[in-house]
Length: 276
Ligand code: AMP
Image 1: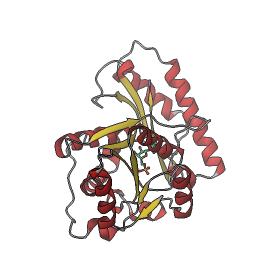
Image 2: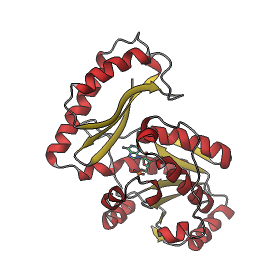
Image 3: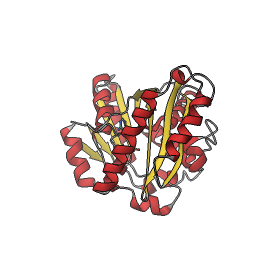
């Protein structure tokens, strides 16, 4: 496994493989790697001859400097993890390397004012800005994203279509723990009690979805979803609602929907989405 910190070395490495006709898979991450990231890596290794994982905590996509400061980071463990997964290259640039001379922020125009975009204004501007930089550096054939960040996939899909038409986005289903919650770097921030409460909330949500009639509209289901979440004793949540899985709007039958939530356990914001 190679750990590459600077753009010029990464380019040299990738060019050598491109000239051999190798296909390159790329997984952008913010580190604190876990089995959810591992699924993306395994998929890339099946599809490509070389797999590159970037680790970069992108300040531009955080809404508060506090959240950025507190984001879990554990380099030593990440290297061990990457070694176990046989990753070819870890690309771990500094913020200066990525943004010096590239200060402009791109503006996301798609899937605006709903879900995470409504509660984290400019978050997705930061996401496409950093991906634009990384896609121009990591000249890859396929890029892998997790369905856990479903709105992100929808937005990035549009961005890639417009700006990187030769790049193929592969989406990977959410990988879950034995207690059904999604693996997430932010889970590390939870105390034992918070984790148990969160698992219990998530499993009640699964039961709530299972019991719903399949003949109702998304709008009707959302009357019930609001009653449900109000009764859960969750201290703070941003959203808990069904949306059409392809358009992310509120049209259609419940069978076309996913349930999306963003809730807080203490200071930790946890998001997930569930296929109905
Ligand atoms: P992050 O490091 O949290 O920015 O995540 C990097 C990539 O891993 C994103 O495409 C995420 O959607 C994906 N990811 C994170 N958690 C999971 C999970 N539990 N299952 C599948 N993909 C995931």
